[in-house]
Image 1 (tube, rainbow, N blue to C red):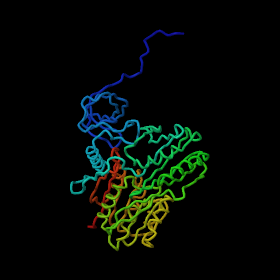
Image 2 (tube, rainbow, N blue to C red):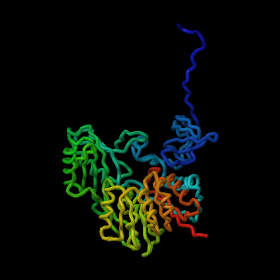
Image 3 (cartoon, helix red, strand yellow):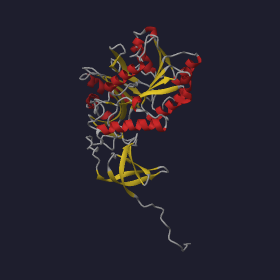
Length: 455
């Protein structure tokens, strides 16, 4: 039975439009401005832009919006050279001039250290921000998704912005063209038996005059291994290419005659150069050219002597500690990744008893070292993005004279620094921002903490 009465009121909300000016870039894919005191987050905006935007999401402390029209473009805005920019998640700041990118990263780190770490960084505590000499094609390591879209044609790309969809590109602006050439050369050998099949590729490129490309290929179905091996084997006849192909479903694998490893040089504390090996799937700094300046800064700040014992937490392949071992008494390296452990042992094979590696989780081993009352002059930390929260209590108990913390996430760095300086145990001596990832919001930061003298 129908009921008479008032007309039903639609709950559909009217679209809201705003005009705003953009103030700065966030540590993320968005820029920020304010309207009536409310923060508005807008992707692909540039500081100085005057925009008309459409509100897409309302939160208690901020709103999100998307650009409808650029009313007045910022002087820092530029035309992105990549045709998939905005759809691909590989770059977020390709539309911002480089100096503004570096300025924003420095500002974001300092503001985060103040807001979360309760550290007001003075001018005499901060060293000049490092700018990558390569603005494009700087990545020597990349994780890519690949799909055979037609016989002889391989689509390669990163995941799309905010999605799991892969956006293919013909000429990526951030990783080395040598990697792309290796994949496309192999792709020309891929036939109908691989049509519409996808796989993940961990790609790495060595430095030097004749760089070697190493590829670690992951597939689900083991039946894809044989045709992929045939393609990459054919490509390796024309290129200095090494590969490892494995099914993550069964563990079955095949490899090139030479292991899928690369090598790169880093400066040493004695003024020489040392060569380190890494695998396509192991962790090492993606920007190997700029990694040399990172290591040089650590050598200068560490200032180790023959009596110093070093604790290297999250040691990887030895990137941070092996350059210091020549001038120190001993290095104790802590790493849980089996592949990195094997490579670091190979990298330190001439060091004898001076290099000791303990395999396992950094939190557990740091606690054991503290319980054993081990003493260290210097602790090096290069944790993953989530930081080192769990091992901070043990590190405080170990109380090394100096801590050098390398971080890829300003928020977790600030949180951990706040925990280390608590109760006046440590003080922050200096900080340096490194732009190792141009055209993205990602940033590397190094801080030096020194133990306070007892009153």
